Length: 457
Image (cartoon, rainbow, N blue to C red; front, side):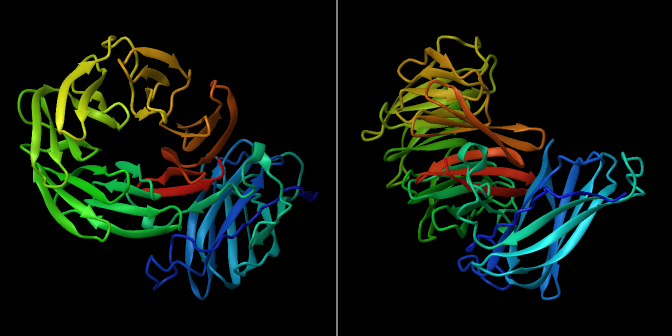
């Protein structure tokens, strides 16, 4: 008996001007490539699909994939980007069971036309050898449609108001690196520290393109970026610090007594943590000259660090001691003076995992366990009741990300911590930002391969 599951729909939504260039084109000229998005319902699955992948191939292009797709209890989701516009693009999808055997597969030809909607049918056939004991007999097919081009204006807004295409996804070779740190500047540039290659990769979120990376001169350890994005500082093993300007100019900035493990821009000064002296040392370097104008030893190292301009204070989650604590150091960003390091009153009474984040009004700091501490004296304020890998803020709402299995859970909370919505996205949670009314989600879809998803908040 041949059973058709006719209500399975695969939407392939293309968006122009993606990050990854067609072959032979520089990263600053990213045109002519499209992205295909897939959503396949599993409501009729009888073969226990646990994983899936997809490829796109054609005689005039390099085969893309296989790209891993996300499998939930109800659907297969994912996308392939960098698809050059053209005819006879073969789209193939394979679905696997827990043993890694193909239980459904199918392919079809589709024409990819930039800025225009085209359709085709795709049937995923059950593999009778790998899935022989499913209920019923004969074929069990999963049938759907493929679409490329602009999203239909009446496609609706599923998942409580999220974009119908799940947002704009940026991926490809230019996001193939290990993420050690990331900072978003006021100009909408995300700076990614990649210690493995001693580089700072830069993504222009507003214009959806990569800028030329900053290439370090030695073994990179730490990064700090001015809020306006004009200057990026890179610290190396041994204490050297370089400064990179927007025009790509690199200059020697300063030489710390030891390797700078953490640093942050504090007004006209660079606040650093290095391993010299007793315990660690905190120092201030004048940004205009590179001169070290203040230093003190017997300080804690930092595993997460932020600067509050309103409070004229650096906040740190310390490391290398037990119990760990959240601390603060007063910094005069004009006079170049630095105060004593002060702990919270609790000294290990609370769980203090990374990261450390400053509230938009700078009245408190948050830590990864969801706890808030008042910025004035580090006394406990309240708790979200939820842990997170990262958090962003927009219009009084909290955007929390954490990793669930191999996927990222994005939860939106109200100002009173009510959960307004939750969604799941490919890859492990890394960072989340808000820029110009857009939510920017950074995930790691495989080792050394990042994905950036831009969503409506």
